[in-house]
Image 1 (tube, rainbow, N blue to C red):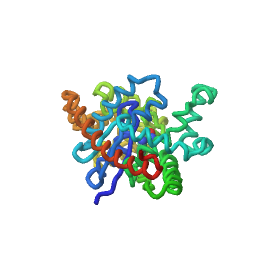
Image 2: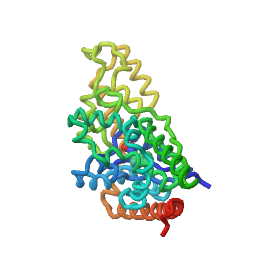
Image 3: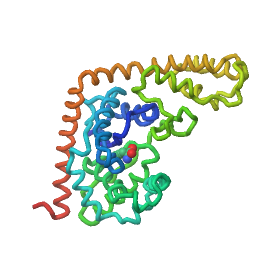
Length: 334
Ligand code: TRP
């Protein structure tokens, strides 16, 4: 029997190259070999966007289309909407007894998110809600509602998986062996750097290329990408290893071209403008099939609705089944 994997993402914005080369390609590979639940975590997105429901609503569809565009096959993956699985909310309530407030504050992912919020809003007491602090509990419910054995995530999510494992152990030790202890499934893909050279490509950093960016936008973004600051004149020799244009060539160009670009750059026989123009062409070429697949769904939004409806219905069946077991174990199976 195929193992079950469960992963999720928050619908707060479109997918960018960081998602594509990070989690995205990995998920596409995994879909053949696993029983795959892919959650669009709108309830989790609402924990810090509760005052912006329109944004979350819009991005559920956007993210679904992006995922289909990168090659997630709805015949292989149950793509579902978190808010439509009430069992997840129920489990969250039950699990909330099994976690201390102190432990949530010690969770490194939560800790760094709280630190960011403090920087933005000042006083923690005024900006950290009960729901936000508790989102790892809700994420444990996401995973265990489907008996997820493996959870493909990036490193930043490891503390959340660990928190889930603790909840599972606690639950099982009190109520009996019902829940499965999940394992993180770390992808080998590296984190994609931003146009500004930052180690992370991210929406909040304003340094991302989105799959939905049109050619004019891609043009503008790549023309503004960071190159070797020591290269002043067109024929100065430069160091490709500090150049973001070279970095993206390595992602979307073929290895012969990449080797040639590297050699010419080091020699000083290649200007940055020419190099950027070549990258723009390659980037557009690379994104074209993705955009084409997306277009089909943009033109037929009812297809996306149908995929989400079916995926959610299947996920619901599984979660209901799990809920019966949980309630029986907790002696609340009236
Ligand atoms: N917290 C994850 C993120 O921000 C998204 C997520 C929600 C998730 N539920 C999940 C990931 C369950 C793995 C398993 O990227």
